[in-house]
Amino acid sequence: MNIKNFKPIIYFIPLAVIQLTVIPLIAVDNITPNIIFILIAYYTLMFGQSYGTILGFALGFIFDIISGGLIGASMISFTLSAFIAGYFYSDNKIDFNTKSFFFLLIIFICGSINSFIYAVISNSNTSVNTFYIILFEGLLPGLYTSLFGLPFVIISPKKGLS
Amino acid sequence: MLKFLKRILFQFKEYFLLVVLLVISLSLLSTNEKQQSKHLNSFALQNFSFFSDAINSMTSIFRKDISYAKLKEENAELMLEVNLLRKFSLENEKLRSLIGLKDSSKFPLIPVKVVSKLVTKIQGNFIINKGTGNGIIKGMPVISEKGLVGMIMETTEDCSVVRTLYNSNLNVAVTIQRENVDGVLSFDGKDLIIKNIPTSQDIQVGDRVETSDFSSLFPAYVPIGEIILKKTNDVGLLYNLTVRPFADIPGANVLFVIKIVPSKEINHLEMNLMK
Image: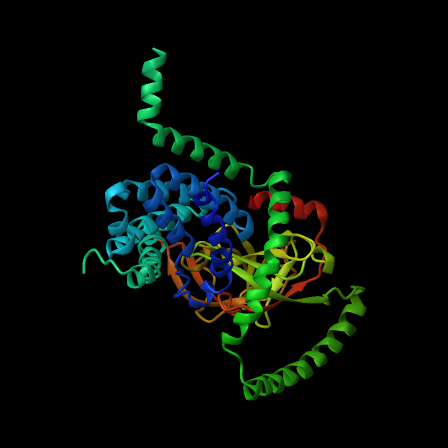
């Protein structure tokens, strides 16, 4: 068993606690960043699509049961968004993908998809406007999440776009 | 043939993996109400609430605190209100004794602290720091000092999950106080809405909304909010009313669980309807 399989799970525990206790304090009109997705996207870009998909599935499952939410909702959204993030994975571009501003773009795209899928699955009210879900449950949380990816880029010594 | 299948499997292994994981997720999604899922959920919540509670007590110093003066002012206002209510209570008691009704308006409150929040635009859930060990059971209403917040959906020994009004899966039977019109309040992902109220009713912006005595899930007359917008539908026969809750649900920190034991059979039926 490789340590790379356990590292994200170790990081996940404090991040999940922060996600459920601290992040609601900085919610803007109920729009919150998803810091767990940043972890998933980071490891997907480091180790590839299959690894990310399984990681998204596993962390989504744990997050669902500890958050008191719908079991399966985060699993599906994390699995699918990690799978999509996996398309950005490249053996030669790991540094560029994870330590440049391109990382923020990936977080924004995949984070928006993640939030959108989660909203669609967990919403039972058919009268909710699709455009509203795309904007307020997809793009804005994705944008907010990508802001939280900034430390990865700023701390990193190699900035692909700088 | 076997070689060909192996090659296909290898070539599209990511897609196969995705499909398998999605199928598992979807099947878990459909077993949410099963007992095994609930046990697993309870076990995880019980363990996780320990961490949440520790972090929550640290972050509570960053929460905005109501000033002492404001509390005093509120206290004075409440004192006046209590006086008035006392007068009504005496009058009510006399009238009730005349028609032989028993008093059923007092409910014990259990103060609880919110330890974690699942904040999304559509699914509002809180985890609170008390559970079955403190007498909380599934279906009990949760209020703040201002009005209704939600309902207990899951309980463990030490914590419980509250489904808030900002959850599209929670529908509440309500009454518009001034006109005594009944309706169903639900969350549409953006606002709290009461749909399909006949335009023949004299509904005004600012009218107070409270829980209806038709509801067996919530005690009657718990304040919920006020109407801030009324829209007529395309045909012009029905209103859709937007309600602003009195309780500050996103900022909720200390809440109260009303310790009522709802009728088991009716509760079970209503809970099934909410699934």
